Image (cartoon, rainbow, N blue to C red; front, side):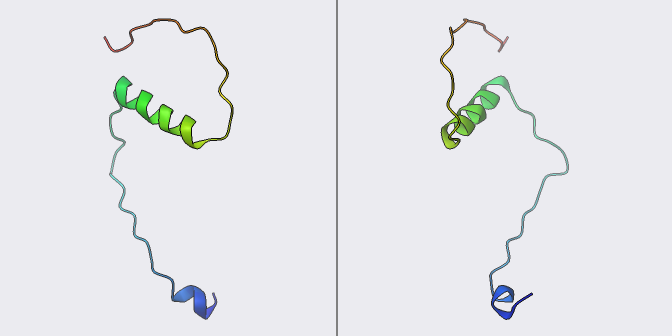
Length: 54
């Protein structure tokens, strides 16, 4: 480890003990964010109207 590396600020990450519950709406929102931040093209496909929230 170099001297310059030891001067960098440390980041502390605290994780929950268990996984949070993802509702279908939250899962769709997270998927939309992932699609926006990736450079992978999303193919246009026919949209089927399916209500999976019930």
